[in-house]
Length: 255
Length: 255
Image 1 (tube, rainbow over the protein chains, first blue to last red):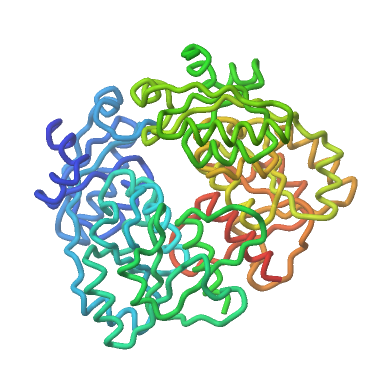
Image 2: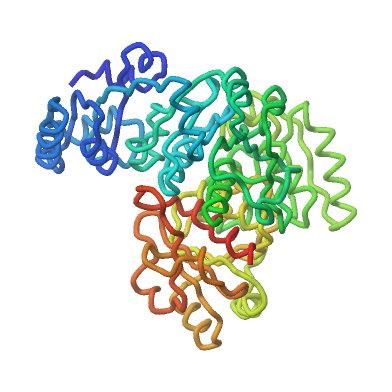
C-alpha cells in the first residue's frame, strides 16, 4: 500500500501536481466505478474487495482501464482514511481535464450553471454538488479561491454526485466579464434583491452564490445582472450557502 | 477558568446532568446575550471582553441575571474551544426547560412544526435550526435519538438561531400517535410521495424529516398522513436532510 501517496493526496498541492485524487467509502467508490473516471488503484477491505473487483472489471470493459484492486485490513485502512466511518476502502482516481471557458459559456446560453464565489467550506461545496445533481444542474464554476473540488471532504459530502457534476476553477472577474459581453444573464443572491418567490427568473445563465462570510464580493457585483433574494419570514440573519443554493434551484425549477 | 467544567460540557452526559451548555464565538455569544437565556459565565479575550461586559450588563437589566465576564488569553481559549477559528470567547449558559407535549400540539394546530426522526449529524441539526429561523418556524421536535440540541457543533452551525428556535426531545412514536388522535396533519418526506411543487400543502401541522441514512423509520411511517417528495430533475440518489428541509419549507411558504 503506497502509504505515502495516500497521505499526500489529502493535500491540494499534491493533488494538483499528480492530477490524482482520493475517493473513500463504499457508496462513493461504487459510483466512481460506475462512472467514466479513470481509476488507478482501489485499496479494499475483505468486505468489499470482490464487489469492487467485479465493478472495476466492468469499468475496464467500458473505459479500457481496469483499476488494480488490493485487499487491505480495516486497521490499515483506518490509518489512512480521512474520515472515520469508512470500513470499505479508498480509491485513487485521475482528475478530469478542466473545461475551457467557451464550453461553459455555451452551456450557460441553454441551461443554468452555478458559479461559486469564494465558498471555503468543503462540506458546503460537496452539498452544493449533490443538490445540483438532484436538480439537473451539470456544471459548476468555482472562483480560484473556492475550496478544491477534489478535496476528500468535498467528494464525501457530494455522496457520489462528484461523478456527474463537472466543476471548473477559474478567475471569476474575467469570466463574468466575458459572460456580460455575450449577454448571458448572471443572477446573484443578495439579502436585498428581488423576491424570487414573486417574479419569474430565467432558466439559463449563471447563478452566482457568495462566500459564507462575505456574500458576493464587491468586485464581482457589477457583473450581476439580476439581484435575487430568498424572502425571510423569521429572524435568522442569513442562510447557509448550500441551503440558499438549494432553495433558489428548487424555486427556479417550479416555473 | 474552570477548565474542568468547560471540558465536561463538550459531552452530553455532563450537559444533561448540569443543565448547562457552551456557546462559542463572537456572533453566537452576542446573540446569546441579546436573548433571554440565563448566562452564567463568559470567558472573553481582550478583543471582546468590554463588548461582552456591556451586553451582559444590558441582559442583566432585562433578565435579572448578569453573567460573570472573565478575561482570558487567546492561547488559553484555544485549549478549550471545540472549534478552531474562535478568538472571541466561550460562554456557559443554562438550558431552557423543555416544553410539554400539549404546548407543541397546540402550536401545530396553528403553524408548521418540524419533527426530526433520528438526525445524527450536528451540522445538519444546526443548519435546520438556522433555516427554520429564516422561514419563521419556531419549534422543532427531535426524536430522542436525534443529536443533542446543545451540542457545541449544533449551536455553532445554527449561527445564533438557537436563541430563537425551541427544540423538544421526546419519543416520536407516542407523540405522533397523540397528534394523529387530535387530527393534526403530519407531512413526511419520502422519495415516492406526491410532488410538493404541484399540489397545495397544509401550512400547519408537522413536517417529519428522516435520518441521513434511513429516511423516516418504518415504525413512524404509519403516522404520516401526507407523503411528500421534492421532484428530482437530475441523478442524485437523495438530498442532504438539511437541504431537503429548506426546499420543503421554501415551497410551503410560496403558497
